Image 1 (cartoon, rainbow, N blue to C red):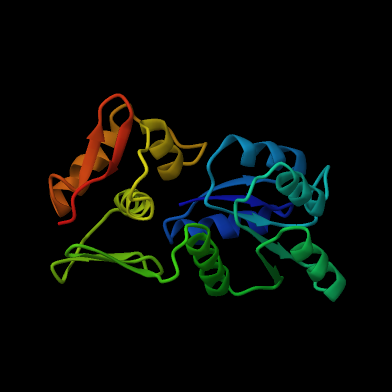
Image 2: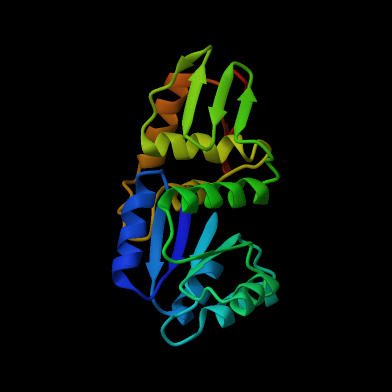
Length: 220
């Protein structure tokens, strides 16, 4: 689950990155508003955590830039600006949620999950697909009532496919969802993750589309 963090404070950004990575969220961090504007246009993030106090460009201007260009990625404003006029301005400018510092990490994670589910048209955290049951909140999955032991990237791949059942993903698109910009990706990494997930769920669970990529296959 790729998350874009625009945060001017290095300690806050690093802390968020460390904590969110424990919840299967791969984060890219920028302190510059201008770089953040470009980043969201260049990569398919599931959500954005946006501080309003950014270098070069104010966070509110960054948000307006995205929305004026039709970029509808969910945005959670996370800022020290706690006055009511600031909160109203952020929501009216197109933010999907607004949370003031200091914050509880569990609340940030819960709000991110809710925003992402809503953006995908999913109203509940639990999804069933044949004998496969998935809980998006606690990142758990079971098959025939038995828990599945998934690695972080196997979970991310499963989540990607199950929340987009009709979509075909290219190898590059899957890489963008499973890895952040700083991580090296081995040439056969995606095929390895697909092989392992098929082995745990079923050989026909992921369907190859020749020349195009992969999509969700048959229910187990």
